[in-house]
Length: 193
Image (cartoon, rainbow, N blue to C red; front, side, top):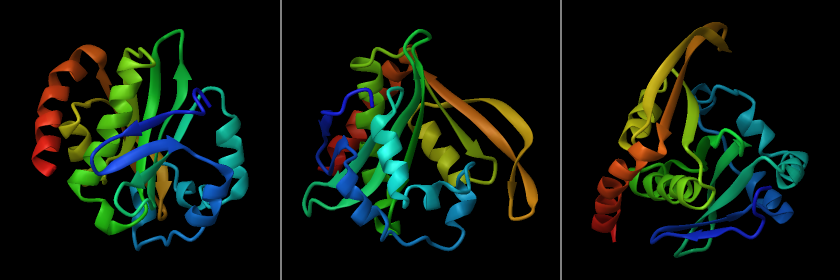
């Protein structure tokens, strides 16, 4: 992991490096109907419940895998990550998953994402953060746009979901654009307090 000691605090949530002991909590997360259809990697929700997944991610020198901790109750409510961190080209792949529907509202997701993406640009000095989303994941795609991501490419018929092929959307935000979006996101987060 890029920085095992990372802790990023927000008003609603804090982010900290995953620990082996987090497996006990993550393995009890319940999948919701159609939840698998939101991820290009349909095995993701099963993978994170495997203790070897956490162990491998902790050892990953090109990734940053963080628990999202709700500040009031100190519960782990999700995972966010930067993986495939390319220090030479200054880019990384970002993702987020919230364990429970009640935490998927804009406030928790926005603050969790903001804190990590801001860390990527300001502390890791990345130039670009990117992600991949299924065409059908309209809610996720809209959320990415709120964060300033622009859809750059469509990979036609890239991922098999429930017996049919789905297009994969590649989105990214560059540092220069993050600076513009950051101000608006900070205003939204201030209203939440």
